[in-house]
Length: 281
Image 1 (cartoon, rainbow, N blue to C red):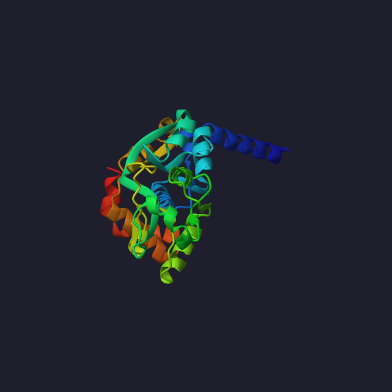
Image 2: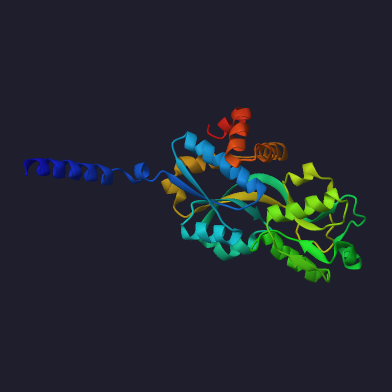
């Protein structure tokens, strides 16, 4: 009986010690919603490493674009790293924005639209209608629910294109692009920059005289309501974060060569320690 009593007292002391910890000490896990896009995978793994170096636990959850917005808005996710404004992601922000906070832009001058290899002899979306057979009447898109896909549907209507718009994923779209490029065949895909594809292939955007795809965007990150109260120092660090074409392109390229996102991000961090350290000052 005496031994059981001692065990009970020790157990109770342990429980009290755990539940008497302040919330900040118990809650050190950050939940990122990650889209399956090269730049999103790259910066998410980069931040995972940087925050884990500073004592946080980071969970990267693969989600679709709509799920990311809904997750941050509901609080089931803490952070979404890729929000294109003022144009591309406006519909999602209009739908969910009252329930999350938009933070600083970490990349400026992003653009998106329909892209073809430079050897294709058309230069404008307005020329697609007369050249439908050349492209087998197909436009290859990315993930369902992405703003780029929705804008492409608008472009199909605006330019009167009798094309099938094929939703797939970024890897599937890149596979189609790669196969066509190697065979020197015409292909039209949805694409955006920053993206490593522009370094791998000689590509061009088709001009958009109706301006369906807008005049370009900056890329912001979003956080759930209450994030600043729970993770003030993390928010301060992340609002210091900024990348250029060169730094982001190098990060994406390093990950692609490593064939493992976290391993590639770690290599890039080691090679750019002065830059990343500046975000924590």
